[in-house]
Image 1 (cartoon, rainbow, N blue to C red):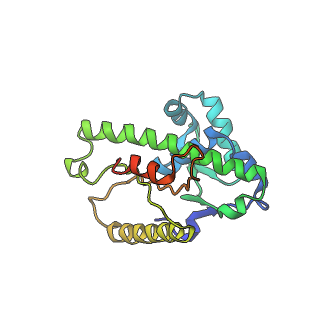
Image 2 (spheres, one colour; image 1 turned 120 degrees about the vertical axis):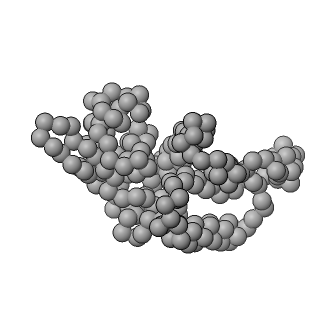
Image 3 (cartoon, helix red, strand yellow; image 1 turned 90 degrees about the vertical axis):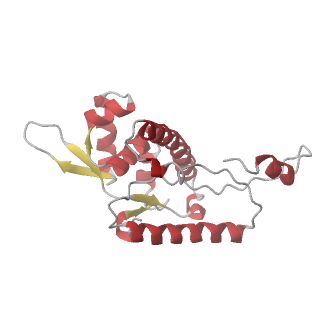
Length: 211
């Protein structure tokens, strides 16, 4: 788990210009790729995203302007490589509700995360099928779709407990050669009851057991 000095904490007032620059799906995607797979050139990222190298180069320079990425190495006669400056971007949801720009960034980043999860799922399936991952990873892997009824306090407690447990397990496995990068995406999205007569109990029963 990233330490505090590896996090970029966004503030809607102090980081207004940075947030505006980051409110672009390709920039968020490029930053995520650098964080997940390490330093890369604009050309390498262009191949992986299906964009032109001119486009990825431009967006990387914008990210660098606001200190999201930095030059990793630059050898004479070779294309520069870029690295992510921080391992994680975080913010206060309450604070980010302050301006339309910060709300737009939060909404966009969540949707980019969902698309990124689809990419990771395809990569996982290919890695299992091709033997790049051992069969011991088949059973513990998966995606769960649960719809419990919780209060705001309980949802906050759940997120805190999950984060605490994940940090403990990551610290325990830090020196284990069997450990690999695992994509863990959490979501806690309260849904208001529908006004059509189908209450939340019906919705939850329909979704129960889906995984």
